[in-house]
Amino acid sequence: MIQYLLLFSRQGKLRLQKWFAAYSEGAKKKITRDLISTILSRKPKMSSFLEWQDVKIVYKRYASLYFCCAIENNDNELIALEIIHRYVELLDKYFGSVCELDIIFNFEKAYFMLDEFIIGGEVQETSKKNVLKAIAAQDLLQEEETPQGFFEDAGLG
Image (cartoon, rainbow, N blue to C red; front, side, top):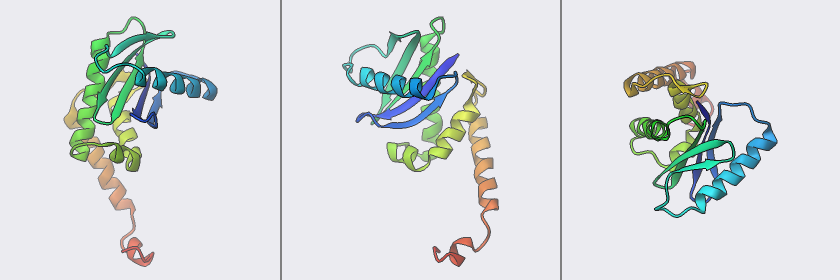
């Protein structure tokens, strides 16, 4: 089971976090701060797996973002790496070629996609097509909820 998933930049800025296990706010902040500094201090040629505190950390850098997840000690690191890669593929499919700004300005879509893919720390949907269909349905629903002429009436259109 995945304990938590973090996305952060090369500068150490947290861009997305999802906690599947119960931690206090103070513990979350400490874990985030310590883990980001630990990963950023590692050399590029070092392994993407490390035993840290009472979990295994699996991380991968894509462009300027680090995708990091903590799994239980008896879980398979390669499956966790595949989960990270699948999430990146989903983001890439949706945003074109995903970048840090896509996550910053569309964080709700990134969270929604993660929620469609992983529930309670376990993968729920392995099909990229099905996850993207759910996102498309959500986009359609959002468009329908925006009243016609809203932007024009507000002087924004």
